[in-house]
Image 1 (tube, protein in one colour):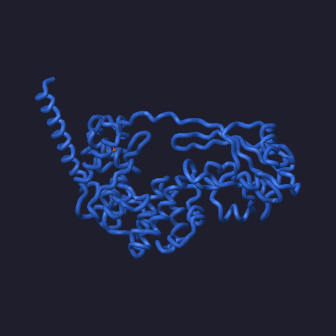
Image 2 (image 1 turned 60 degrees about the vertical axis):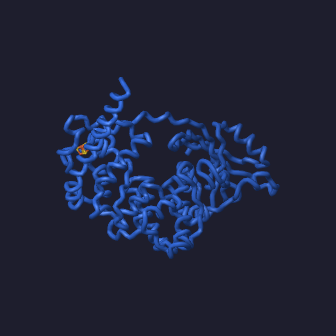
Image 3 (image 1 turned 90 degrees about the horizontal axis):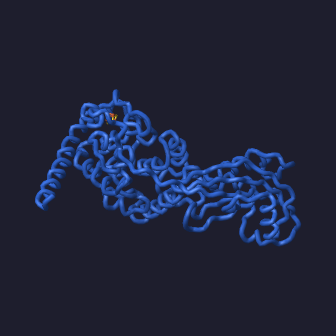
Length: 389
Ligand code: SF4
């Protein structure tokens, strides 16, 4: 192809993309009409003040709407204002997030609350540029807070929106590429209406969450923009969005120990950076240890195992990693001697574990066994025999 021909073809492509973006304008009115009749009733929509929009949007990046509702209600009860949140301790904030995962997000919420209290009189700034400078607020969150709470005419493009837009336009670019996301965001930016930008962004996300579904068949028969959808016209809805296959997750074996001594259980803090940074955990090893390995490891630390019970296997999936875990409950003799484990571990009672410490969901299976089976009133007790739990 000559240089001139290549240029012509690139220009045609560009024009073609521009006309797709032009076509997208037609979805605005039917989508808003549909949203007026079908928007789900959600706690943060009842009173969309900026603080509630911010917290709900960050929580919704973690999990499904139904799972977010109780977390959101508990959060708002504990911290009714940004001032209350800024004044809380990190342990209190983490505890309310326990189970949602991605703890760096909640730490950023806490940092932002302190900045907003100090620099903005306790109210989130009203401009996109100021919002995006705050910790944990990226382009998506600034777009959702800006459009929903402040009626700014800005897009907010999440996975739902990417799916809907690639189907309507039959866009074949890989949505895992940053350049595709940039292009689609630009298209959405051109159609966000000046009137009701927040409702429009929510309508697009709502359509993706309830009608234009990700796995399985979308409910095109109920879709308000089916007459404008190119993938539907071609009967190719499940071919979009195009995504390159995910890299396979690394699998890692782990052994988790529930160590009980004098009615308390051992926990330790993880390093300040990396996976589950700075959170509490039960002692664990990155290998599958046998009973005799465990006894040997404990004796090296100067601990004297009295009774050891093998627990069920458990699995936890992170984004790029899987932990395949086995676990032991071990009662230790209290022989009054100093042990190197006392520098590494903290020995805590059950009320502290339940009310104050945040144990990440990765340890949920063993945490639950400990609370359900070995916790009597305010103390932990060892297992009476070697049955498996
Ligand atoms: S017609 Fe089907 S594929 Fe197209 S936007 Fe609607 S639900 Fe999605």
